Image 1 (cartoon, rainbow, N blue to C red):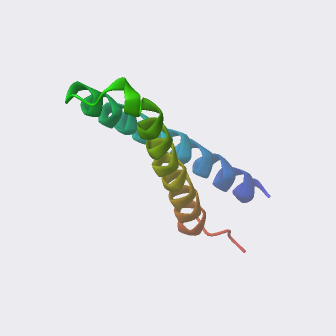
Image 2: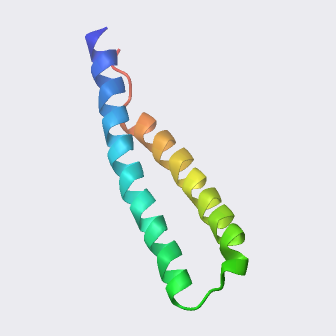
Amino acid sequence: MSEALIRGIAISVELVILLSIFYFILNGVRLILFDMGLTQKYSKIVIMLLSVVGCLIVVFLSSHLITFYPPRE
């Protein structure tokens, strides 16, 4: 039982660390796009696109971490 708890904590900690890294990466991409001359007219489109990419990253990372830490039997 304690191994399952440790597994859940380890997955959660790694997921939080990786999500914070990708949050800052995607925010940097947004800032670069607007600094390169993208107008505010496209801000909603860019935010939606980066949100979709962020959601895909969350699904990929969580599924990868769950399979990376297989449950002990």
